[in-house]
Length: 292
Image (tube, rainbow, N blue to C red; front, top):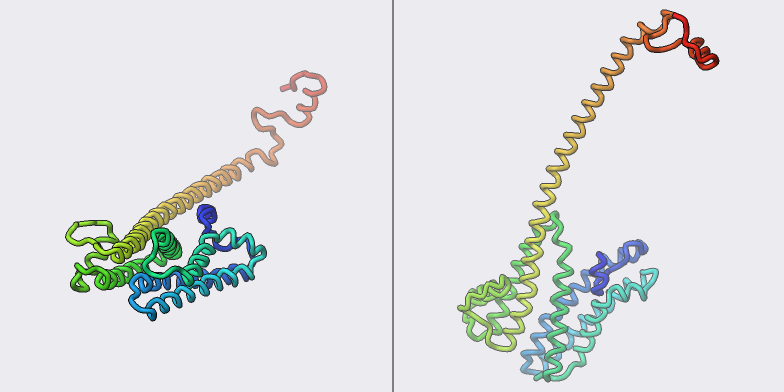
């Protein structure tokens, strides 16, 4: 990954590391993504918990997320030549794993103001990690998967608003509110009113806006790549034409040299403007010009 991701704590495995580390990271990054996705239902189950069973389920999901993230990081670090350097390059993922572990033993609902801030910051990190994980699909050959991922976000967002927002009376209205939120349109006909739906709207905006940004970036990359391929073809055509012209000039020069060779070779005469070898030696020795 790039240096900017490295500074953000999302550096992945160093490209100069061993093949085993690169192979382990190719699986670990998707396990990290799965762990981050688990955090979304866990957060809302704990937020809306009305029974001990719901709270226990949320804690179990957080525990599964902590195991998934920690296992992915530990497996990759074990395969790296410098595990400490790998963990430093991926401090963001380490913080997510620690946050998931802390959520397992978190305070009871309702949360205090400090716990609200910490949990919202943790979920914001989750949203950023999901968007970064999907960044690989900006590549033109994977561009077709972005609309599918965007559609999944909208479908889940519609279901979430339908379950969390009392003013949403149908799944279609929830889907419309999810589209308004993800596209940051804000028509004003609907708006989240409860704390749960507002928090959910924050994540829909982050994920939806991130998906749209990735989609537009991928489309721009595709157009730029297409223009670059056209310019490359034109350059190759011009280079071939230039090579053909140089080859033609070379052949003409060879033909001219062959035509002049019989005139100067084998006749015993000296070409105009040139001195015979003996005359040149005499000029060097005496300084006198050769006789006519």
